[in-house]
Image 1: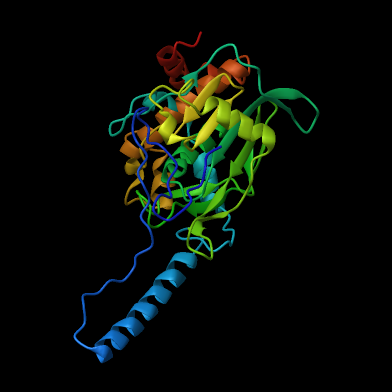
Image 2: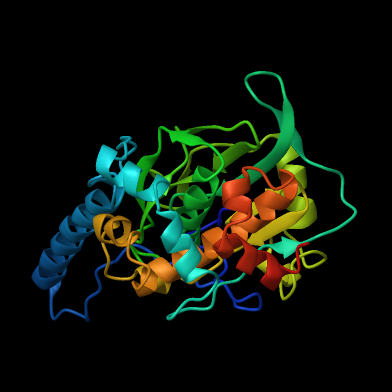
Length: 325
């Protein structure tokens, strides 16, 4: 299970794209400090100021728009952005391939000999399952959702995606992204299931992120088995079970973001989404290269269907890099 921390001193549980990289601890909400005052009156004044500032900080952390700090209010993705992230032109996938100008992009990790992970479509057909575990506060989840949403959109249809940003006081604060919390995904090729375990804001005590969704016993077992050093190169026991975690039919795994959230720094959600039609955009390269890798992995689960996706030059480049036949 991707564990939430016990205190504000360590509230990140995710990894950057490089397999051996360490998790960056999140920053706790800002607290006021002062030097030693000269007398009782000064102490009283300072104390009053500290109380006021602390109250304002707590309000700021626990409130605000849902796309930046979160307040439990769902904000649906607008139609324009939805069309941009689910309708990336094939020419962009093929031009980018698996090359990024700005960051390392890691492909899913191939595993063999494991029990398959399947689910049923609405029509009752058994298909391979893609399972995702993440959290809204997590900047690495924020980066990963872009490429995962785009990759899956090539095999099915999204509904109910919401706007989101990572925790404002974590590393890579306010990374623009989406949330799966109310989403649904329909495909005749694969099934997608997700758990956003925590929100992007703190609980009332300020000691932890607010709990959002809870994995089933079977989903926890997947994370505890596969999101471990046995299957993830470079992962250590001290890192626990990093998020985001994705298993694709237990044949391909993603642990931590496939590219660093740094690629999205100082960009708005609209900037990123609009740029997805431009293969020369550095951030588009990172997102689409990751999407091609994930598409190649999924194609190996769907018997290379749909053929227009699975035989495209961008996916073929990813298959070659991943040594998928």
